[in-house]
Length: 416
Image (tube, rainbow, N blue to C red; front, side):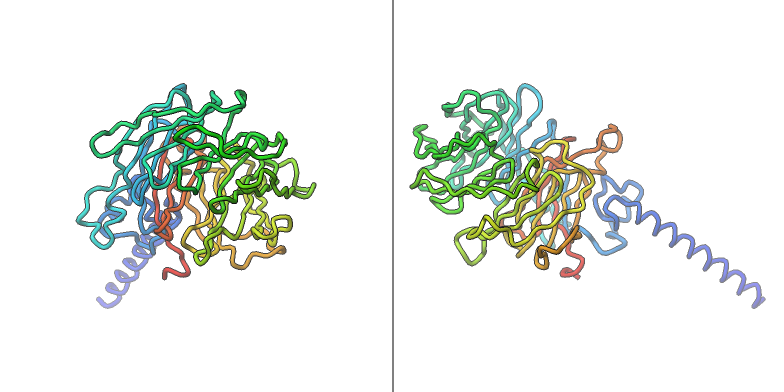
C-alpha cells in the first residue's frame, strides 16, 4: 500500500512539474515577455490576468489601448489628462482631442473605475494630411502644418459647450514651396510659433496677427528636422544632417555647429533635456538613422561628451518617425523609437565615449504584437511617442497600424 502511495505521489509530482513547465513556456511566449501586457493580446490567459493578476512581476503598472481610424505621427498634450492626435494619410485628416482613460488616474481604486478607454472630447477635419501639430500652452489653440501646402493652419479646440475643433485662421508663408514645416511654440506672452522647413525659412510669427517677429539670418538650404525654444528668446534648430544651430530672437545671426564628416550623410533628429533645478535645458541628444546617439552640453554643442550606437536592426522606413525624447521627471532617462514597432527606454547615467550598444532598461513591444501587425503581413512601426509631463513613467505611443497606447512601465531594478 505504501509503495502504491509513493508511485501515485511521484506521478502527481511529474504531472505538476510538466504543467509548470508548460505554463512557463506560455508565459515566455506572452507578448510582453513576462505576461501582463494586456487582455487584448493574452487571449489564452485572460482569466488569469483579469482576476488574479500577472503570474510574474508586472512589467506594466498600467496599459491601455486605442485604435485610431487613421494612423497619427503627432501626439500633443493639451492638458494633464488630454492629448491631440491627427491623421497623416489620405486626402483629409481627422484632428481629435482625446481624454486619457480615467482608470489610469484611479490609483489603488482602479477596480471601482470602469473607464479604461480613451474618450473623444473634441474633433475636426483638416483638408490635408497633418505632418506637425503643436498646442500653444495656456490656450485652446493648435497650429498644424501639412504635406500639401505651405501654410500653417490655426485651430480652436473648443470648450465644454462644443465638441468641434474649428479652423480659425491661416498663416501664409513667404516660401510657397515649403513642405514638411516643423513648428515649435514660442515662450513669450503673446502666442507665437517658430517654424520652418529649411534653415533659411525659419521665422517667429505672431499667431493673432500673422506678423513676422523674427527671421533667421542664415541662407542655408539644409532641411529642418526639429526646433525648440530653450527660453523666451534662445532657440535650437537641428538640421536633418545633424548640424545644430543656436539662435536668439534678439539677434538674426546664429551659432553654427556642424557634425564631423564621418557622421554626415545620415538623417538626424534631436531632443532637449530640462534640468529640474534650472530654467534652461542642459543636454541635447541627437539620434541618427543608423542608431548613433550623440549627447552634448548646451554650453558646448560642438564637442559631444558622449557618443554611442544603439543596437537597432534596420534603418527607419520613414525618417520622420525617428524620435529621441528625454523623460521630463526621471533623471538621465531617454526614449527612442521609429526603427520598428518598439519604444526603448535607456538610462544614460553610465554612458561614456567608450560605451557600445547600451541595453535598454525597458522596451515597449506592444505595437509589434497588435492584431493588424500580426495578420497584415507588414509589421507596425512606431510613428511617435511622448512622455507625460508629471507622471514619471507614463508614455503614449502610436504606430503605422493606427494603434495608440498609453503605458506606465515598471523598472525591474528600482521598482522591486
